[in-house]
Length: 312
Image (cartoon, rainbow, N blue to C red):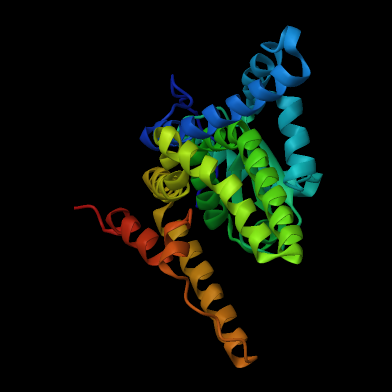
């Protein structure tokens, strides 16, 4: 690939929100409502005089997704990333400049981070983070590394990264409340089962009947929450294909195809090694496939084919 310096034409719109981003945000609305109810309920119990303040602060906290210091904290202590060394920056700089130049994006908008991992991987996170593994940096040729970074840039320019984190953050109080309820219920059933079967049955009735009643009363919230993980996974798979398309449209389709083929070959080799060691791996079931946020390699490679054909 030619990485020589040239004039860069920046797009007027640096990033947006495509259909997958909008769909993802809409699918997180039921979770947000549940979280809001949880926070409002706790606020009414603990802070009756200013019960409105915690929900307002929590809703406003979503802006931290785009707050640089908060992003750095998230990258370092949650994702386990680090800043690149001088040698790593020298390796990344021309590749990233080529990718952003082709995309018409200001490269300094985003921060490149390193994950000390022996896996071939990279990801986009929060509002401005692009992470890449040390293995990818050391072993991928510049063209393939550019394709990987172009894919992650596609997640940012399409709005996938910030919407995913925002949805997760706003659904977190509801998730924690559900986990607490499940833990209490499990503990209660465990205790009563040591007493008698009748006590366990009575407990199930006491908790089960109100739960069923609540489910039917607010089905328009409960049902979307139950099916949301499957719909979000489907949207996530679509987002991956859109990011692939973004990289391919910039001219990185052959390199991205090589990377995907390498990853697929490595996965098959790992399965074969596990089989030789006596560990037979079962193929993922239907539910696991529906919950997968990434399409299979055959699907991704098939969607790249139009960009690999010679132009007449």
